[in-house]
Image (cartoon, rainbow, N blue to C red; front, top):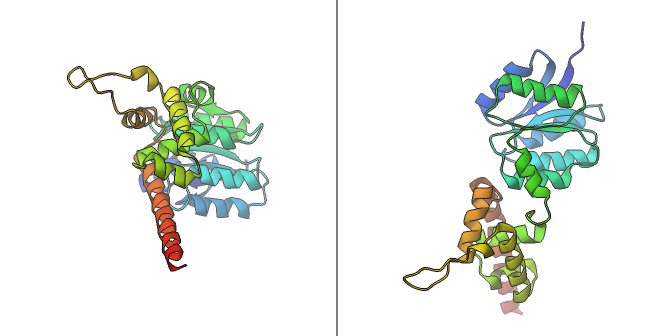
Length: 253
């Protein structure tokens, strides 16, 4: 009798979770987690140095990227198949930065059939081979090219202008000079191709709004999305509250 391998399934959507269970139950002994935090607890509880996981990317409490980052930090041989509706560059970019050397992983889009899912899972967990969805590979290549890959500093200023911050507010939040903010913006515009689109309105003679154009292109590329912007908005509100507290304390002094 063949012993089934333990596999942790991290998925918060009940329908998707049921699909995974139906597709994989014959080959694996499944442990179910409804968010990344539960999956992390299950993985650390296992005696194996290389636990196996299939994980959604967008989950409450702890998303798939944070789950992978923390788990690989403690168990770098862990094998993870990311299973998502999204091929957004922001997720691919984040994964490129955290995948340990020689780690085997997979990336499967949810619109694939059960057969494709099983093929990917077998490649990663049984054959020790990486498996990346064909629709994700071009995004992965762009996220690694020097002339188009957005750096962490450029990504920060992208988030800030997407949230509507002025140059002065970005400078204050990121501990930069106003010139430093503008330099990062120019670099971001170049990476996004905004500089090549300095269109002028023939009626008014005005140029396009570069900040708005950069956000629009970033949305199209998948560098930002509504789910992650919601998280960033929460971080921004926390920062704003801290600034208000500092102002109050300064006035008291």
